[in-house]
Length: 108
Image (spheres, rainbow, N blue to C red):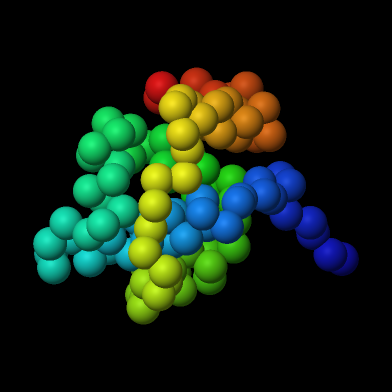
């Protein structure tokens, strides 16, 4: 019997995917210094939990996350993909996608 994924995959823009893959790599390789995606996250004052929430909804296969963590990072430099408060909007989309129990775990 085939079991489908627990939830539908959130679709990312190209810029979001590049940024989030860089961010995953930066998180795992923190001992090498603050990477470019982590610097952008800090500059925009977005909690790491919000980015992890988007990753959980978009890169739902553990192998995808492991590959991003192990590297190499994307060759394209990361840019902040969410103008204004669109990161918060994307987190709200995750809440809607995954349902209310998850929404209590996500911070703004």
